[in-house]
Length: 289
Image (cartoon, rainbow, N blue to C red):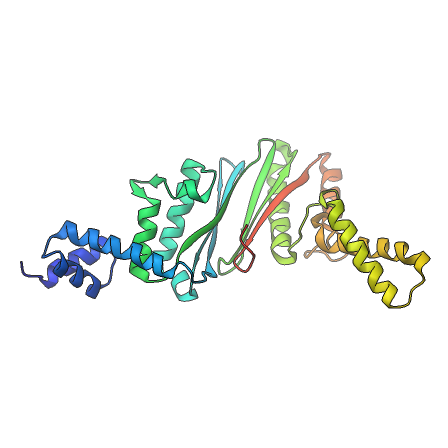
């Protein structure tokens, strides 16, 4: 069977693969269109295997708010280069993954890869995209968050390389609209200042003891008297809390107040008990968890 330019174009339109790859697949399949598709899919799997040990440190982070801000999803999909991260094929796949997570609420990446959305398999779409682009591509992490008695707000930094979800509980109907504005500010705070905890109660004794030992050892080397080392260490712990606990961080919107001050003022003004419950911060440079 003659491999015409029209047939090659049809295969390209169907699979998204390059023209030369389509022509080679059709030649190998002796013009059998469906067999050529299978060959291209197998090529995608082959490319994936070859790229498995490569680093995929570029990509995008996407979020979606649902059910009147009572549910949200954040996903991170990675590739090797920024050029691919901005391509339509990659962005469309990342949104496909996001929609699949929204629909099925999988418990793990492994489960996600077994699912389908709009009749398309996540694993097959991933394999096809790897074959088409020729880079390592992976869904590295996602999080589904729900707030039965509060709201969730998101923030995506310009370039989609950093995203945040933040959940605020004990939100009354009368203050919901106002707290959404405040929650967006707090989400931006998390993005900009990268806290590790909401408040100091979340910091483990192990972390605190480790920090104190470091502070004491530094002070000891500076020649400080042994009897005041604990006092110095405790003082520096306060600085640690201010840097690492969201509630105690200086607000990026008003550097005369902490995030906790702003939330307390809101609660006092509205006779409410809103509290920051948790946050998720996905950044491409972070170690994947």
